[in-house]
Image (cartoon, rainbow, N blue to C red; front, side, top):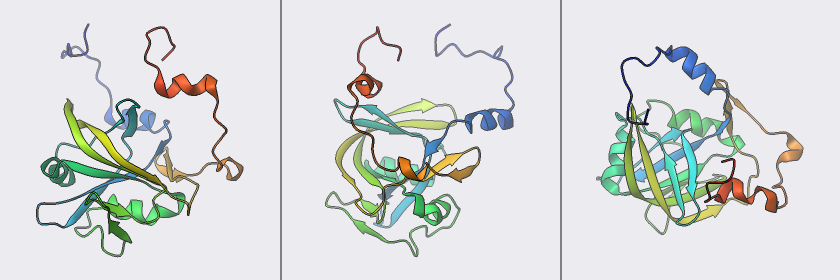
Amino acid sequence: MGANDLTTTDPAIDPRAFRNVLGSFCTGITVITTFDEDGAPIGFACQSFAALSLDPPLILFCPTKESRSWAAIEKNGSFCVNVLAEEQQPVCARFGSREPDKFGGIDWHTSDLNLPILDGALATLQCTVANVVDGGDHYIVIGRVQALSESTDSDRPLLFYRGQYTAIEPEKSTPAPWRADLEHFLTTTTLDTWL
């Protein structure tokens, strides 16, 4: 059975149980931002973000099909992924709410590529929309990275696990030394690896 051969004989999956199981996968939290057609900053909190390719540099995120922020990003053609730092829980809560002015009271600036960047973010990736794929009740948006940066102010990510914020161990905030044996974890291109 191919990936596109979904039929009505698929087992019924309880949505709440599905969410609970997915909650067992710890994720970082991002805020995806852009400017709308009137020049106002717009954005939303997003857990469904991932690295996709190193060459070319591609990432992906998955907005709901009804997302007003996604509609603005699609029209603009570019966006910024703001990777939130541990102390940005209030920022996450604001961008995850239905508050109409999500940027109210939030420190941010406009980048050289004319995208809104949240001050204090752990890292940012400024991207153009490269492709959009249907993903059920979401879209899978592939972005090509045009510019990136890392913060020097914070070294701990904001994490989400089983329906609540969590953190890494204090002594784990320094990046580990590069390990060649893990390089394929991010860059595998052959069929003979476990990935």
